[in-house]
Image (cartoon, rainbow, N blue to C red; front, top):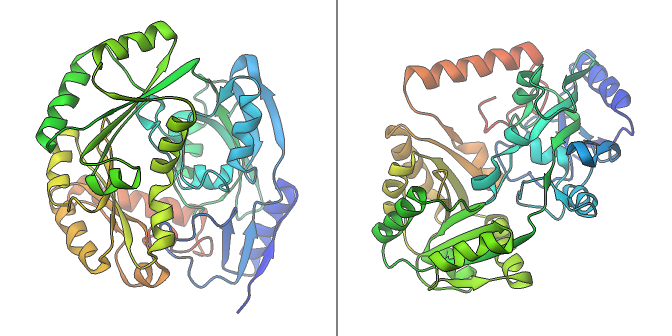
Length: 390
């Protein structure tokens, strides 16, 4: 059945549509530009689709204050292009950059390699407006970087996959574009050598804005061989000279070659899912010391990328049948793991969000369920999208 798609042109209209859906107990899906359809849980029992694609305005931009407010349907790439005209950026590099919307990036809490230097959306969102099923527009936070009033409400929406309310606009902290960048590539012979390299980096003065570990399988997709450490350094020419002096033997990339390399890393998993739609992409969060344990359970030929300074590992598993055992094993060790991308059929039949069996994790999940009931007591909004659990 072809579902109707509504794209209100104002936040007020968006809120009114949500209130109408609630009044009729009509199950509704919130979408942006459909880039997250294979992520998280499948939208189930949907009767109508409400899109943010009509909400694309820049509401307020203060270049000197390093803040900007835009509507949720604005393409993320358009936002970055606008900011670049003033030598600025949103310090996020999420996948699907070519077509993702601002609201989709925030609602999915998407980030990439720049997480090492700048954090995630939770560190960059300073406020937002969202529409509730009561038909209200709720404003949380503001346009001041250090403002903390009301931010907890906004943080509930980040990573919620639209299961609580519909984000209609987002206020961001803006960063200046680095004056110069340079990419350094290393080929450690073994995982142990890679860990020793990381130990030396963390003990020293250098602070790159990105640092990823690529498996041999992932490195081959980037035109390299073997285990690969990729580092993005930023700063003045004098600052970059310090990196060059420390890493004289590294392969160095600049300009378009470097941009193409990092773009390939950013889009690697979404593109692989396009080629092999029956595979699955898993994400596991560990401590830095446990990261090696997780990696030793994966095959070299797997497409695996680790945020080497954050403990988050992404891996493409072509044999979907192997995924449940991997996820269960990670959870038994106390790590949180999710199915990040998978086919609709796989997501309908599998547990997607695996949390450790300990009191703290159970209490956190129970709190999330209570929040869901508070915002959406009828369970009609993006039902099942939060990894099939909420």
